[in-house]
Amino acid sequence: MAIIEGTFEEASNLKIAIIVARFNDLITNKLLSGCLDCLSRHGIDTSESSTQLDIAWVPGSFELPMVAKEIAQKGKYEVVITLGAVIRGDTPHFDVVISEASKGIASVSREIGVPIIFGVLTTDTMQQALERAGIKNNLGWSYALQALEMGSLMKSLS
Ligand code: INI
Image 1: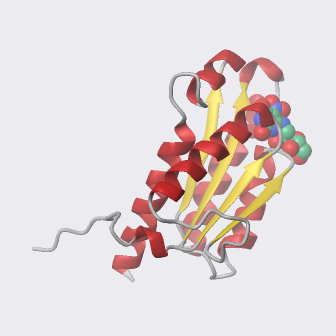
Image 2: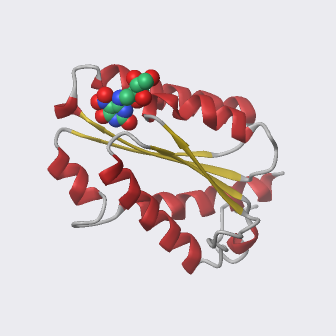
């Protein structure tokens, strides 16, 4: 019997891209800091001269799938992390943005075969978003951990 699962021992060798939405950047910058903290504690070089980590910025979460596809199909990265914050209070087109972002990211990930972590916070209020981006817990840290696990798992399957 084979137990197939991701591990964290060799995570430090992974090539990773992070795509961050500027919309609600008070939140997304905090998610990015949490993400980078987790990656660096797992041995990833997060310095500006890093050759294993790149960061791309997009206007909003709606644009995450398109850029994720472009980046994932380069074949350079073993895992891609998308970070965004969609807050219901901001605008009625909340539902459109979150629906397109989530469906788009899932479909690009399956199509290209590169794990794309869905790190888009979806909340009713800015307060809830702040709580999940650092005041109580920083989900950016969890998204990075999930990226390391999926990157390792997919490597073990290839
Ligand atoms: N983008 C977000 O990332 N979060 C939001 O809450 C949001 N709302 O609510 O409007 C949002 N809108 C911008 C959208 O992602 C696109 O950038 C824009 O529509 C241009 O295509």
